[in-house]
Image 1: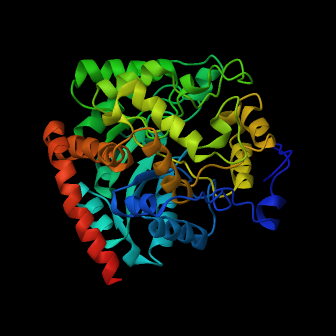
Image 2: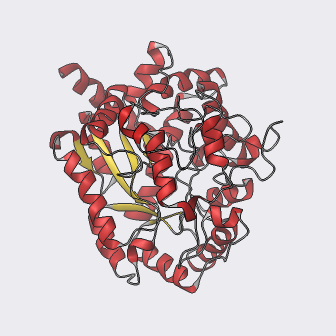
Length: 415
């Protein structure tokens, strides 16, 4: 683990040491039954590590996806870009991702529909579900949303950390500068709904997020919105060593409840530095299960997903934060958490089976876990992108998953 990091002390470490926090995360022991369950169930995580901040070498990314496939991870909500990027930057980052995947074209399926996710599951491939953590890629042209839809973009965040034309991100709000949803932000939401791209409120300041939820509920009732990777603030607020303001990446309970009431989902990220007052060196399956369990008790099992927000290199994250210092003005919170040892996360391929054992101990059924691991996300995808009635999807999903599981087992045996 990296120690005594600072925003200035980076660079050389990124290239002279194998500081791949995600890759070096602990591989937790699990039962054969849990490993088989993960293999046979549709699992959709969240990889929010854009080129430059999360990875710089194609093989590093390909190795990550291979490990995920070996563990049975079906697909990933997958961030193309974050922070203050324009449209040209978005195209550049998209090319970097696709260029890496093109080295192993038979291993990836861009998920335009749930059918693509199902096919990836049966064939043991990786379903790629594009996300953008910023709306700045639109610059001043909302008509670009139509193009993003055609590229397969499934979800998009309005504001990342700082203040943007759409509104404020969580860090700006943390520093008392939440301007709320702007008229431009409303026009972006209008186009997202028009082209059936899901509104993701992760990273969004509370006033801006609640304004956006107000606008969705009034203008587009019945259209769900989501939090693709957000830690529950309520789980950590009573920790003895919790910071006075908490982690700026956490969301309050009322926001999670509103997302669930819309028909959406909230997915906790198993990221150590965000666990305010805990900051473990290795998040345990029990701690990961705590996040899931907290959200299930808060919003119900039909509205919870999973997301690990995997980091490949702490040094790269620090480097990225240095280059975007305005957007990471958190009073040293993140770096201090790194210094306490919280430099990684529970890589989904290494922690999910063990977390499955833990959730079984807590009384979760296989049907519950199938919803949390992928079904709830697919229900929202089907509703927003394909116009499928959510109740009809829910009713049919369990039976359909049994069929897909059998096909998956046959495919594995043939290999």
